[in-house]
Length: 258
Image (cartoon, rainbow, N blue to C red; front, side):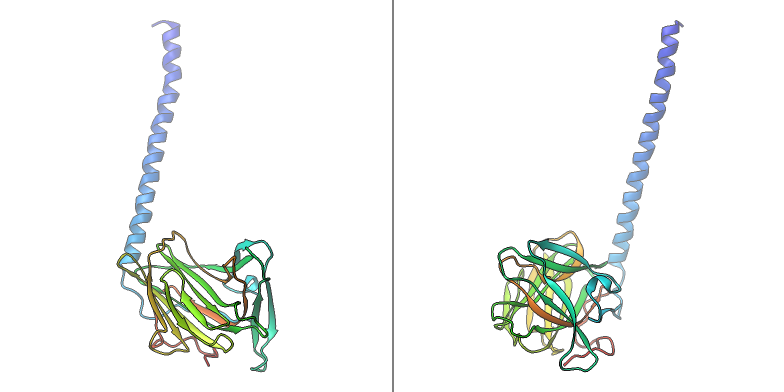
């Protein structure tokens, strides 16, 4: 064997070893991906829990100081102003007031991530009304929710319009008065079935199905519309990622529901 041939073999050995290591790494990575997918499938196939895992935002502190914490998203142009104020009707109660400035393309949302399971469904409830001296065209309610497959958005205006944006269904309500809204979602054929209940009435005020896709899992509220602006008050927000629980399932104790 010549010196040149021996050198070529010595150079080739590390290369072959690196290639083998790369193949092993790829196999390991593929195996890990399969394990994660299998675990997700197992969770999705498991029976849905029968009780909600309520999480509560009380409205006593700003959303980014709450537990679980909210983050800012969908922010554009001039930000909204969020303040904690005294409830004029309930002594000692605090509420979140959210006001975004009028103007094209102003957006700002408070966002919470959740481990939504489309097959189990989700529940989101809150108490809200228009802030004082709110113009009729302003947003009172703007909640978007996503389960990792589909999304929809509940929008309500001071002048009484209420709609599920992606499901394209509409109703009317009194935007100047306090209302409790409860939203439930669950996987349906080709989309996400959505029911909206108001003031814990067992009959939904809105029912629809959204086929608008989404690959993330979160909900957010505030002002997600560039053409509109928000002027809202929120007393509290609660949510569960354990299933679609209608008014037959009580909300957490201590919340004002009238």
